[in-house]
Amino acid sequence: QVQLAESGGGLVQAGGSQRLSCVTSGSKLPFDTMDWYRQGPGKQRELVAGAPKRGVTHVVDSVKGRFTITRDATKNTVYLQMNNLQPEDTAVYYCHARLRIRAGVEAEYWGQGTQVTVSA
Image (cartoon, rainbow, N blue to C red; front, top):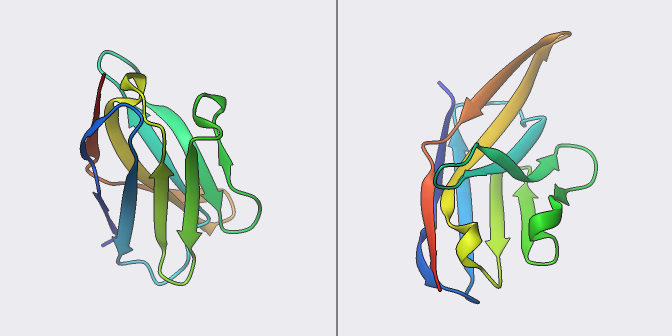
């Protein structure tokens, strides 16, 4: 059974930094993509950053220059370094992974989420 476990959230002041980690278990294959999503109060869940197995990592414009996603492909682990955090970054951050089973069939997995709260 594939499981994703996030850690590293908490309370931080504006301008501060946090590093989120997502450790996975149960998959013998490297995930095709590993991403970070977030859901702020009263908002829809949104993609923050992505790290494909092959290709270039990417972050959305709202966090560009502040957030960095890195991935350890050998361990199926992904990290999100968040710098210069702002109150609008307050959200539950979720780790997400996608695995291609065969042509046209994919499996998706989500972690439970970790709360990041940024105080002004």
